[in-house]
Length: 112
Image (tube, rainbow, N blue to C red; front, top):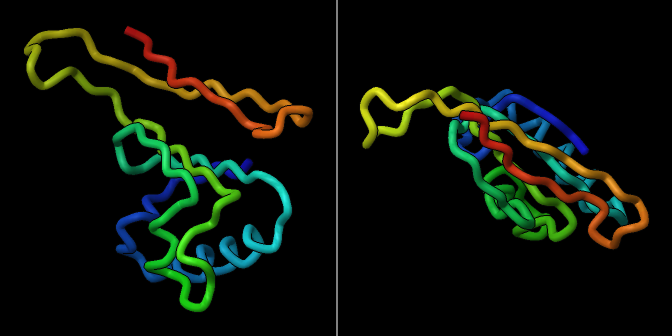
């Protein structure tokens, strides 16, 4: 499991390129599951096989089937349609079970 605070999907920063290329090389050579948790895109989403990786890496597979990325919501928000509604805080509960074929499981927890 790798936890970072960076928006890698948008490819806005060239400094990320070296890290992403090395990560892709290591992940593609690794024979296990990899969970990449990122928090900077401000919307919860799950990307299986990180299809955005092909923007960074030439010569490798267009995706990494053993990698799942979970992007956590990185902000405290009030629902746009409910003015005056209480803020919503979200966090991610991760479970690691090396006996499970998937190794990682998670759940989005919403605190009101």
